[in-house]
Structures are given as structure tokens and as C-alpha cells.
Image (cartoon, rainbow, N blue to C red; front, top):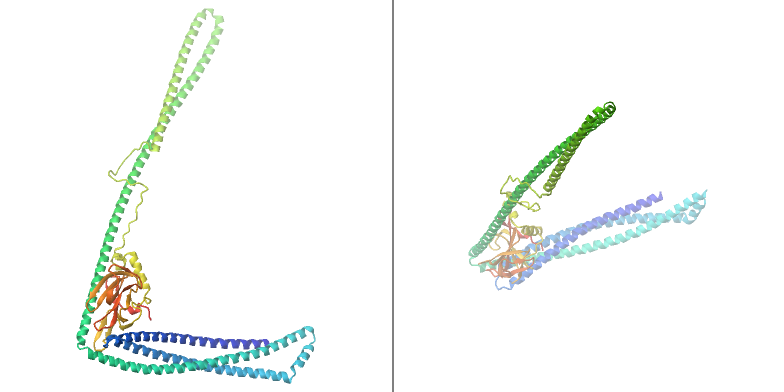
Amino acid sequence: MLQRIIGIYIVTLFLTFTAFAQKGANVSGTKSELQSKREAILREIANAQALLDNAKANQKVTLTELSALNKKLALRQQLINNINLEIKTIGKDIDLTNKEVEVLNQRLAKYKMEYARSIRYAYRNKESQNMMVFVFSANTFNEMTRRMEYMKKYRQYRTVQANRIRDLQTSLSAKVTHLNNRKVQRNTLLNDEEKHKATIQAEADQTNQVAQELKSQVTDLSGQIAKNKAAAAQLDNAIRAQIQKEIAEARRKAEEEARRVALENARIKAAEDAKRRALESQRQDELARQRAIDEEQKRTAELAHQAELARKRAAEEAERQRLKDIEDARKRREEAAAEEKRIADAQSREAQRRRNEERNKEIDRRKEEERQKEIARQKKIAEDLEKQKAASQKQVEQYKSGATVVTINKNPGSGTVPAGSGSKPPVNPPAQEQKNYKNMLPQEVQNLSASFEANRGSLPWPVSQGVIVAPYGKYQHPIERSVTLNNEGIDIGTNANAPVKAVFKGVVTKIFNVPGMGVSVLVNHGQYYTLYAKLSGASVSQGATVNTGQVVGSAGKNDEGDNVVHFELWKVNDNGSFNTVNPTGWIAPR
């Protein structure tokens, strides 16, 4: 039972601290974000103030000074809004800390009361003596061991109670310190807010004063606005003409490449057709040679078969003759025996018998000569057949070795291509892909476009220090609010002769010199173009390759004497159309 109580207390304490820590972490995260935002706004205010100080060096008021003041007013208002958010966050943190302090006080009072009750109980009951009696009054040794373990757990529980009270006191002290610090921070922010409110009022008065001075300085404001619009339109037309020219050049190169690929494909196809015809002719020749070899083998086999039949007939004839000779000899022997028997009976017929015997010998001699002649003739026939067979076998071997080729060319005039010669597969891109401007570009240019687009939102600024004094798109004139201006890029107020840098690697395709817009440098990044205008001079030449951060020129002055850099970003779409895009979404935030 005692172990369960101790475990419940420990788990409760752990969950309480965990909840408080999570709430504190959430508040801390929000606080750090607001502080980072406040520091960023303060940096922008410092940049605007530096631009304002630089503009004040001029003897007369300029639009840059007015734009810097307007920028400071907007940033100051953002700073006040951020301070209000911080104050609200601190207020929530203070309320949460007060609740935590209250909960900790309640738990501390509860733990102290329980610990005091335990101490009083031990004092009234003389705990040491009762414990000894409780232990030694056990009936068995095992029961005494269990009672000793129980008393040990009880002492550990009281130690846990004391440690818990100390931990809660330490946590409570830390919470109170944190609460006091947050209250001090809130008071500091409230003081800063009051200062910024006073400053924003003074800056608003200064802005109105500058606007009035500008109105008094400009005698023909509408003429100046028209002049600026004409200069911007002239620059815009020059840029569009240059981009259109480069698109046409890309199309021309793509068409030339397509024609080259078509010719290469035609050449490859012709070579493959010639190779196919040569292989077909070679196959037909091989078939004809094989047919000739087969026919020759058939004729040779037929001659061999005939020779074998003749040999068999000669052998059979010789065997028949041999049997006949044997039979004749047998008959002669029988006749001779009969004749010998008759000699004794007919002496008179002896002479006749001798004549018959001589005649028979002559007959036998002639027959033997004829038989030997027949055998010689059959042997010569067999030798002739063997020679013909050997000659036929030699001719077959010559056909097989290719020494004699029977050529039947069914395709006269066809070319011959070695069997080992290789050919490239035709590469013919689909017509739909050729119409896509992106696919017209070489692969390395497509990679450059993809790399430029991948850096969207993280491109460096074209100047190291500056403030946007004229936004992208339509905006009201800073003096004549009834006049609406349209900006194809952004105007960045900066220091005099500030170095202007390329925001990404690319190729300088054109350098303009438009009156009212100064020197302008156009850099190609594949499907994207960046323009750096209102420069006092260019540091690069047309056709040069530039890297990220490389200086392309220096900031110049406009007609009002402002140090301004005009920056534009153009994109060529897949269908060949092109337009400007808002550069503020591509350059890194400050």
C-alpha cells in the first residue's frame, strides 16, 4: 500500500512538471520568433535610415528621401505591431506563470501539511520504540523480515516527502524569478512602444514636409512623369525586341538541329537499307552456294551409289563364275574319273580321251584367261569409281571452304556493307517537343534554367545595401496620389556608385544605353533574364559569361539626382511568350 502511494505521488509530480515545461517551450518558441522578427525590422529601419542620410547629403529633396521616409514609416508601424504581439505574448506568459505559481503553492502547502502530520504522529507514538516492538513481536523470522522491509519503505517515503518539498520550493522560486523578469520585459517593451509611437509621429510630420518640398521643387510634375514613362517604355521595347530576337535565334538553331538530325537519320536509314540489301544478297548467295553444294553432294552420292551397285554386280558375277567354275571342275573330275574307269575297258578310246583332255585344258585355259580379264576389268571399274568419289569429295571440301563460290545476285547494283560495321539509331524528336521553347534550348541551357528556378526566394540582392523605393507592378505616385504608375521591375535606392552584382550566373546578351534609364545590362539565364538598369557604366562586355555576385556595373543617378538601381526579371514561357515577374519573390528576404 505504501509503495502504491509513493508511486502515485511521483507520477503526479512528473506529469505536472512535464505540462509546465511544454507550455514554457511553446511560449519560448513564440517569443524567439517575435524577437527575430523585431531584429529584422530594426535592420531594415537602419538600412532605410542609411539611405535617408545619404539622400540628405543632396542639397535638394529627392524622391528617394521621400521613399525612404515612407519605408521607415511602414517599418516602424510593423515594429509597433510586433511589439504589441510580444507584449500580448508576455502577458499570456505572465498569466500562465501566475497560475503555475498558484498551483505550486497549493501543492507545497499540501505536502508540508502531510509531512507535518507524519512528524506529529511519529512524535506522539514514540516511533523508534514502537518500531522495535513492531519488528520483534513477529511470530516467525520471515514475518519479522517483511516488517523490517515495511519500516524501511516507510522511512524512504518520508525522505521522498522531504525531497519533494525542497524540489517544489526550488521550482517555485524559479517561477517567481521568471515572472519578475517577464514583467520587467513587458515594461521595457511598453516604454519602447511609446518611444516608437512618438518617433513615428515625428517621421510622419517629416514625410509630409518632404512631400511639400518636392511639390514646390517640381514645376512640371506631369511632364516629368511622362518623360519617365517614355524612358521606361523605350527600355521595355528594347528588352522585348532583344528577347524576341534571341527566341527567333533559338528557334533557328533548333530548326537547323532538327534538319541536321533529319539528315543524319536519313543517312543512317540509307546505310541500314544498304546493309540490309547487302545482307539479303549475301544470304541469297549463301543459299545458292548451299544449294550447289547440296546438288553436288547429291550427284556424288548418286555416283557412289551407282559404283556400289556395279561393284556388287561384278562381285555377284564373279561369284557366279566361281561357282560355275567349281561346278565345271567337279564335272570334269567326275568325267575324268569316269574316263579313267573307261580306259581299262576301252584302250581304243585312249587317244580320243587324250584329245578330249587336251581340248578341255585348252578350254580351261581360255576360260581362266577370260575370268582373269573380267576380274581385271571389274577392278579397274572399282578404281575409277574410287577416283571419282575422291574427286567429288575434294570438290565438296572446296565448296565448304569457300574456295569456289557460286554467286546468284538477285539485287544487282546494291552496295556492300561489312557485317561488323555499326550504325547509330535515328534520333527524331516528336514534333510536339520541337514546338516547346524549353525543348529548343540545349541541354546545358535547360540545366541553367532549372538551377535558376531552384534558387527562387534565395537569390542575392543586386546591391549589398539598399531599400526598395518603387515596388513591382502598379503603385501610386509618392507625391501625386491620383497618378498610378506601373513598374516592370523594382527600384532599389542605394549608395552612390554602389557596385551592382549579377544575382546568378549567365551570359550578357545585350548592353543598352537608353536616355533617362542610364546604362542597362541584360543577362540571360536560360528561360530567365535579369536586367540591371540606371547604371552609370557597365563592367562587363556583351557576350561575356558572368558568375553569381560578379559586378556588372555601378549604380548611377536618375534625373532627380537619386542613387537608384532598376532591377527586372523576365521569363520566357514554354509557348514562346515572355513577360516580367515580380523580383521580390525571387531575391532573398533581408
